[in-house]
Image 1 (cartoon, protein in one colour):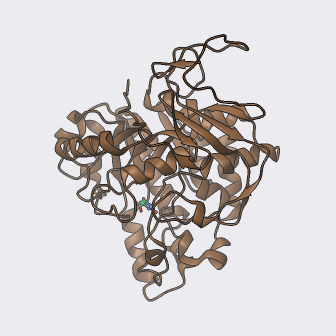
Image 2 (cartoon, rainbow, N blue to C red):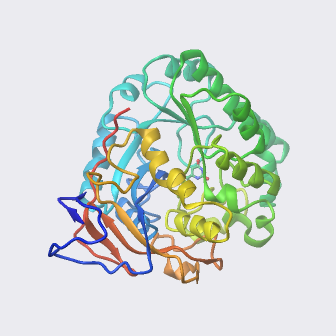
Length: 413
Ligand code: DOR
């Protein structure tokens, strides 16, 4: 039973007349998923996505809280830009929201003082948008000053530049994975790890993509370092370029089947702490431009939970693992209180999923504004039937119940 936005009582039988009762017979009740890396494009590129549309896609996928990235337009690199995002989110977000502050070479003050933020995001290599900090002195200054969590997009910009020149003129998107190769990711992850160790600075490595990084962290992962993986790097690999071309172009790029396997094993043995989606919407029209004019990134916020639950039903992972990877793991890593578990006194962010019916992913069913998915055609189960945010139904069997609004997340770290 939920009241005042919280899980009030958990019992086999509760004899209280509720305003609304939900028949959960035969369904699986889960804590709402926390997606700790999304790009919702607002402000600046609302034609691709907005905080409203992105959060609606989120609750459709069972995601009740998200952490959003600063590569918007303008980028979220100051308190003023953060306040603007918070105001927009308060008006339109149907899920709970938190934001990263983006690092530039000269906004140290804002990085350490802007509030509320879940952490500092450093793009060590250029990707969508214009955020980049790749000079050693600038990175060192950020790691050396302050104690906030630093989340890194770890790719080596110098090596990317060099390899872009070597592959100039190539229009086969498969070279994307060669230009931004495993070595690019490994070098940057090593660099971030070294800085984190030197200053004992809380580090989170975003979207780990290579077996090389898994092996590095298996050998050397201080207790204050966490790492995540995204479904694209678990379920897709370079063979998908032949089928989907530039649609599956992203940064860091999709890798080989061996990398997929190493990432799964890293998840199972705890080297990788949790799962994010890196939901990065671009329109199909933009994505179909010839390489390298095609933008990097794919939507994913509404398919991550069904992908994982389908894997669970195939006997390849357990429910306890999914809860750790998608609910309580991100809550613990970012210090988000009272979320990520179904416990009396916790916030009533819940999703009720159907693990009996299989349905294909279809572009036309997507709630993201860009209305496509790299997983189109896959038969998945575990689709949410209801999603509750703060004890109120936000998603109800295929539709959004308007009127429910998420709240700004609190961070204890
Ligand atoms: O592929 C990507 N797309 N990687 C990123 O780092 C950014 C993202 C985006 O915002 O489009």
